[in-house]
Image (cartoon, rainbow, N blue to C red; front, side):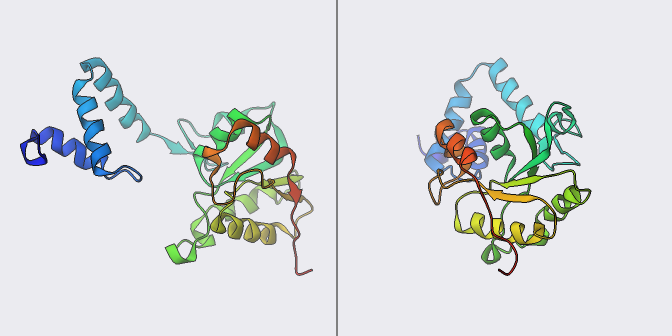
Length: 205
């Protein structure tokens, strides 16, 4: 069956799925056919999940995407409030929570610095991070940006921005392959990366 022969609803679904980054046209069509074969209950559940995602908000403290503000991690009295792990995306929080024993807090930047893509420091939540450490209660900021050129650039910028505060700024070890992202790292790799983190050099020296 060609694209022209597909029912309008099926073609429209494939068109929309194909707009998701990383999904090509053929994959989108396979997903559309899969949805066609789903039960009404399963399809309704999928639709409900998609709409629920659109109802999420951002935590006013850590900037993570959550169902309620503030998020469960930020209000958990058992978390170590002296340590903040800085990540690029909400998915990175989930990866670290699943793979490591980290019990501190998080801060989600909303991306990384990428001048060629038009993303600069002011487009991220760096200002909110600085506000969180001003009172001196935070003793360590762990930078867990991805080990990419953009992630390293962002890490360096953060280290400089935090250099005036009396705290340790550390970077997760290079156990995560260069050019990769945290959500593709295994549990063992992420655990080693956290345990092997090292303080970053800040200032002009």
